[in-house]
Image (tube, rainbow, N blue to C red):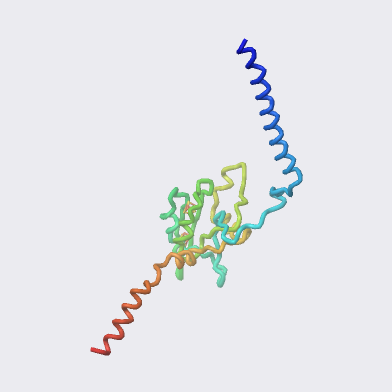
Length: 190
Ligand code: SF4
Ligand code: SF4
């Protein structure tokens, strides 16, 4: 009898809990029904990228001469952790070029090391990630495609030279600077 007496109380208790939970869930739904949408109709509508956004990789031309900036030095190939870059150097009289340059973007880690080591700011990241495709082969980028991407999208601020400047050793600490200054003042006294 005691068991029979407890069953209805459990039933009603659970029903009250359920109705409470549904009520709370519906209140959240109702609140969001009248909120401004936070999504956009991509790809018709694109969000502005943040200033420091760095996305797909591309090759750049020199600003002054319009020549290919890449000198085929292969530093990017050596530094790339997953080894997705392959470069062949073409020796020229005044400077060298990349004879071939391929980048397997589908296996890229976007670590930016290739950008950081490039002495001529030839390989850069663009302010876009917009290269979605259903065919993996579309992401095997050759030199022409990399140059075309460089013209198609806005480059990010981060070039190899800028990044290396940021990583340069810091200036001497104040104490050291003061020590040097004292040394300089002592010399004339001797
Ligand atoms: S971003 Fe990193 S993983 Fe991608 S190509 Fe450059 S070095 Fe390689
Ligand atoms: S992209 Fe830069 S680092 Fe890579 S081969 Fe060309 S010049 Fe050298």
